[in-house]
Length: 218
Length: 242
Image (tube, rainbow over all chains, first blue to last red; front, side, top):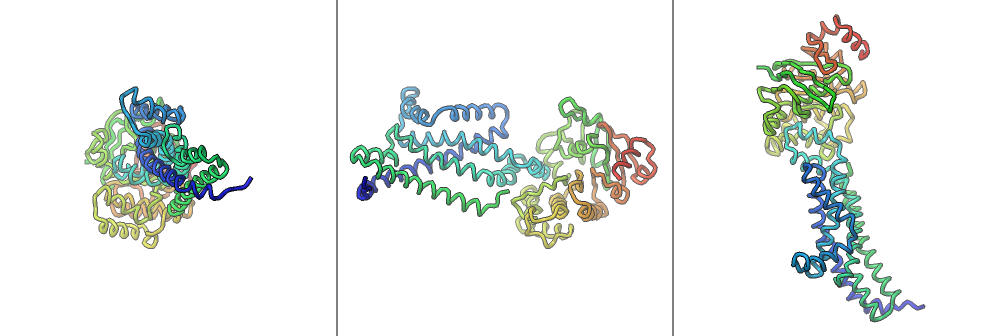
């Protein structure tokens, strides 16, 4: 078989616009997911029995169901259930927020609880309230420990966006699929799609590595 | 008025009785050395003073404030009772100088400049004027513990609590920490020290307390108690630690 470069060149504008959507969903989704995960993780680690139970139920619900089912639920089931109508893009971003949030919650909890108890006590012993101790002392140490697993989650979430093909978001995989249907050049198109994903995850890895190098892991 | 007042204080860990109706009064300027076998409750007694452990029965007053009188009062007590830990517990993400300046900044609301100036003075006082920009991981155990003492002093406490401050140190590093503590005692600081350093107790301590099974069983002048221990248990204990 001959590899036809012109197919890729013709498909590139559409693929790049798909990649742009992929990046948008990932960045906005992860920003929300990190915020949600922070709250849920701290509720798990330091909340009372009630907050802990709420957070635990959320994490179990999300970790126990596939992300495809979650996004289908948001897009197709919510309108029937609660008369909430969302466009595919919002459904996709919400799915990433809710899904990554559950995993990030466990990352946050693990990192905070891994910090030596003595540091927390040293903060309290100075007369700081618990929240300031977490913010100024335990948090910065925990944050450094979160970077490697958080990086993992970012990459997983980025690749999970390809599943949103099922609700018709025009992200990268969907674009590839559409061009494929018209041109039947599977090798060229899927190679190009794979390489574009690699470029995106590679960039993420690079960003993470520089962050890690700048912050000494404690 | 005494600085620390235990009134029939009881503390349990689960079903284990760690402090058994302890009565104890510590006056300003006293240097109290607490000794006893492991599990006797001496560290717990110390940690009850700044409410790192919650008491289950009785009452405990620090400078007239009860440890059971609510969160904000507990924070006041903690600002009046500086704590030095066995494992130093310095903040690893901060330099020695920032460790010392942290309390005044965040607890006392001091300005950056004032906190920094005070931290430099305190580091000089513990003999580490040239180590301010080092991170804890770049310091020896003895140096870390001296930074920890400076950090506790920075919030200007009326009372200092030491929880086995030299137990995690090599013998030659203990000396430098003990010297700093001795200087502090000579400045008139009220101190409660959990330690096995009987030489320190003799030389610096004004009062020696021996604990066993959650009770204070001996309480007196360090030199008298160490040299002529009347109780068999104390004599046995002193033989083991010496």
